[in-house]
Image (tube, helix red, strand yellow):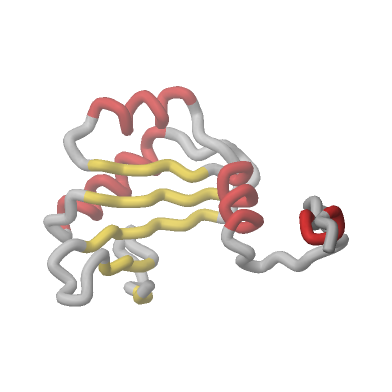
Length: 115
């Protein structure tokens, strides 16, 4: 993921090696819910880049109006809230560490065979 600075875009994910398809990323560390105006600004930034795909990540959550807005626009925008972000971090082992490891046992069929 590349860093873009400001202008409503925090990073770019290149979907292929040639960079023909890109996903633009906006990330916000907020306590309050992200509302429609913030998503609207991001969509405007996408249009300024002639981008069709975006991911908006927040540590908080989204208002119902923001979620509804994203479902009605032409651009494909994925909203990742704090809960989903934590789940993805655990699933992909990003910024996490093991607390406990539990062995998973299976039957050893060789133990039961007669010689």
